[in-house]
Each structure stands twice: as C-alpha cells, then as structure tokens.
Image 1 (cartoon, rainbow, N blue to C red):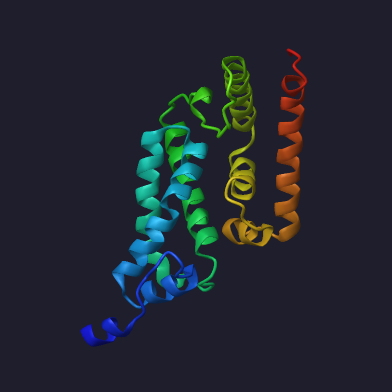
Image 2 (image 1 turned 90 degrees about the vertical axis):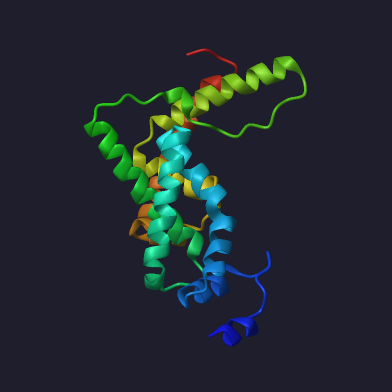
Amino acid sequence: MLKLLKRLPAITPETPDEALVRRAQGGESAAFKALFERHVVAVRRFLRDLLRTPDAADDATQETFARAHAQLVKLPDHDRFKAWVLGIARNVAFEAMRVRRHDALDEDDDALPVAVIPSPDPEGLLLDAELEKHFAHALGTLSETRRAALLMRLDHGLAYEDIAQAFGWTLPTVKNEIHRARLKLRVALLPHLKGERP
C-alpha cells in the first residue's frame, strides 16, 4: 500500500478536482485535504451569504465538509466537485435556517456581506457602503432558494447545469429562478443606482 501511494503523482495547485476526487475516493486523505483547502473559502462565503453570521457560517462549513467526506464515494461526476459541495452547503444552510426559525431567532439584515471595490476617495467610500447596504437588504428579500441559486451563479460562477444538479431542478427552472431573482434585485436597487431616495 505504501509503495502504491509513493507512485502517485504529487498533488499540486494544478491537479484538477477530478483527479483529487478519484484519489480521495480511493482513500487518499491528502487528496481530500487538497479539495478542502481549494474550496473552503468559497463554501464559507456562500454559507455566510445565506446564514448572515460568521459563527453560523463556520459551523455550517465544518458540517458541509464532514458530509462531503462521508458521501464522497457517491459523487458520480468527478469533475463537478464544486457544484456538488455547494449543493451540500445549501442543504446544511437550509437546515440551519429551519432550526433558527423554529427557535424564533431574529436575523440581522445588515450582517449580509457583499464584496464592493472601494473607491479611493472618502465620499466614494461612503456611497459604496450605502449601496452595499441596499444590495444586502435587497438580496435578503429573496427567498432562500432563489438567493442560493443566484449566489451560485454570480458569486461562484457555476454553470446553469451545475446549479440544476445541486438543486435537483430542471435547466429551465434554474434559468427562470435566477432571472426572477435578478429582476427583483434590479427593481430594488434602481432608485439607489440613480441616486434617488425611495
């Protein structure tokens, strides 16, 4: 067994997910560790956007990768690890939201992070922060599933097919949900982008 492991090529940043998944399915812990290190930041960001608090995102990230490790042998498409693990993260987040609603905890709409490129001047920074707040609020008004689908597409760059796989939806359903989410955001943000006040 040790001789067999020594013959495997070294894991590098260029090693594709597909090869890492195959090796991890074969029991190589270093391969799963490489998958974890490659995708943990994106998974945590996705979970924080859904759950809106860093602590909840940290817990959900750990749960996501624990489930991914336990279920890795069931992954049929070795080249779609990112879509698959984000699908697991979505389920973990929705379970956490159900528990939170059950416990009647309030959510803080202002805690949703949104990446904004800061302007070099103080006035620009103020405008960016205000727009970020409006965007976070508008994103928070979307249903959980629409918000998750939109974030998978915009923030993580997943193809519609990968999102369909992660949600168990048809391709037209994915396109429709993302289109409706974009329209709702556009309507909510239009007055702020024009410099108007609602």
